[in-house]
Image 1 (cartoon, rainbow, N blue to C red):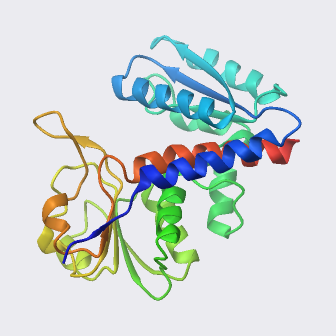
Image 2 (tube, one colour):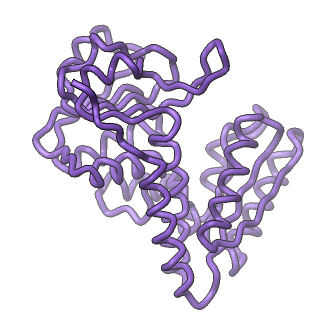
Length: 279
């Protein structure tokens, strides 16, 4: 068996083309604010990519790069100002933040109407209830990939490895909403291999190179690798032993080129949704 590659890069390009067409129809250009606090190298790369995505989609990007020692109150004041700006439809504060800034307070200060990451408590509650305005970008990107390849979670056993608020928990909810039977595993799961071997759809979002080996994958399973790590040689990789897993899985996402581009594309989609609602 040789797995079919779930090509997130190609699908993301199509999503962005659709967003650009829809954005051009609006009476005002959609606007996204991206805030980076500090000098985290990975975050700097992510922000540069998001700025480019905005350019590709015809979305105005307001890019704020603040020093690492920026006081929390100063950041909150900026967020409050952005909440009131008519030309800003979406606000994204790049995580992680410096230790002296409370992440929860920052995320709860962003207006739910402009919370295009879907991290605000209000938007998280709507996801739980099943009537979300915005979906968290990474889980939404995974679902778009599954839909594009006609992979339905309905009636399938879906195993999610990782329980973060950003990926693991909402990923489980979205699979459940499409009638998957969901198991969420984490660092305290004693029998991870046995759980993974039951998965028709296996999603790994831990951030640990080599966590998912081929003998943990049920033959014919769909494998979605959300993680982004660097190995000893500095090369990007995920949680899954990709080469070996390709011999067991029916479908698999590569790293890079799988979920990552879809995450960014769904941010553009959410910004368009916010702009349409406000206009």
